[in-house]
Amino acid sequence: MITQTGRDALSQERAPIYEALERFQKMRVVPFDVPGHKRGRGNPELTALLGETCMRLDVNSMKPLDNLCHPVSVIADAEHLAAEAFGAAHAFLMVGGTTSAVQSMVLTVVKRGEKIILPRNVHRSVMGAMVLCGAVPVYVNPAGDERLGIPLGMRVEDVKKAIEENPDAKAILVNNPTYYGICSDLRSIVRLAHEHGMLCLADEAHGTHFYFGENLPVSAMAAGADMAAVSMHKSGGSLTQSSILLTGPAMSAGYVRQVINLTQTTSASYLLLSSLDISRRNLALRGREAFAQVVRMAEYAREEINRIGGYYAYAGELINGDSIFDFDVTKLSIHTRDIGLAGIEVYDLLRDEYDIQVEFGDLGNILAYLSIGDRQRELERLVSSLSEIRRRFARDKSSLMDYDYIDPIVVLSPQEAFYAEKESLPIRETAGRICSEFVMCYPPGIPILTPGEQITEEIIDYIEYAKEKGCSMTGPEDPGIEYLNVLA
Image 1 (cartoon, rainbow, N blue to C red):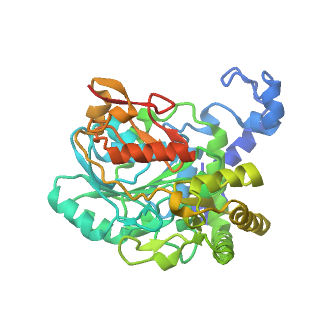
Image 2 (image 1 turned 90 degrees about the horizontal axis):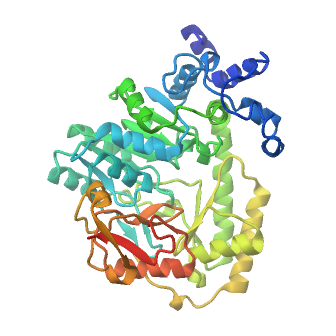
Image 3 (image 1 turned 60 degrees about the horizontal axis):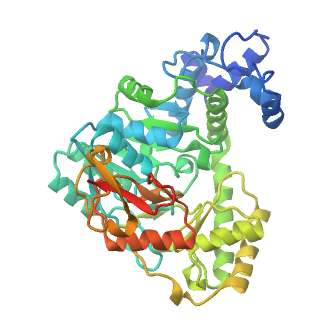
């Protein structure tokens, strides 16, 4: 274990979990424990796919390697270094994705019947936490951009109004940033929360780089938030499903650990843990330079895409000091409707015709996710492909459906509705009924309907149109989304 002196002296150059795995490999230990593939020998096909090194490092918790449920040595050291790198009081390594981190945040601060203030355009993981703990969401409906057809950030005045109307709320949750790159005034929202005895949580699934880049929106910890869920595997470069939960000084680290252990696996993957450890070191040592390059690439791509005509790659010019307080310029968000194509149609064309996979397409936009692994030549290929799509496939945009953010009509808490008696009806027969399940396009995973909300003709039209355009719809029990479960 690193001594305190060692921590101060070596700091971010260490990767304690990775170093412990390297030592372990040299010990030639005979495995009479799990996993059953026994360092890959029992599954040669998987070893051929993933490689011998990967299989040798897929090991079980043991004293030399610590235990994620109750870390006392190398994992504890890695978490200390992560907290230091992110400017947090404590950091928890998470192997259940940022979904697990977000749900742990919510489960830590609210319980059954208690209120939490949040924007309606949250990720499905937040609403899943509502079902699990029985908390009551108080929605701050985000502003919308009529041209782009996307939800924006929370206005400070709207948050203040929600606080005044719900002084018994326990916490406020903020997206920092949204999937599209839009940031609310996080510092002001944190200050409002604390002035009213509430905690402030941040879903920073798409904001890892805020902690290491320059001239980017403020990070949750720098803004004084109490908890933040950070997707290291998105913009931070670690393996898929690895994440970090950060906490400020007001939170009890021991209690947060207890909450995490309610749902997180007791068989933590050392592949994921070591990837978090190594990626944190990489960002701490080289992140500033790496993300400066990401910003340069994004700005280049935006300029070139906007020159094509018909597309709109938007960024900081949208900032209005309120619902768009700041913008994450690494997000290459592109509006497509002016060439007569929905975002999901451009998404499909890029993949099927040009072998380019972007992050998502919705009804009006696509997102090309840029991070530390991208290179200039791939961006040039994206730009040229978008130009060719406009030339080959553009059409009259009058055939596209006009749409906007739909304010939810909340009747019951998500937990009450999810576990209530229900019946399955054809979707066109559900107008006016109370939904008992989730409906969303994934990605981005922002629910169109959550349990406890009233279904309207407008929502049904939106779902049918999204299906027609090819959006990947998830959530309902019926995989074809021909039927919806509603309260009986």
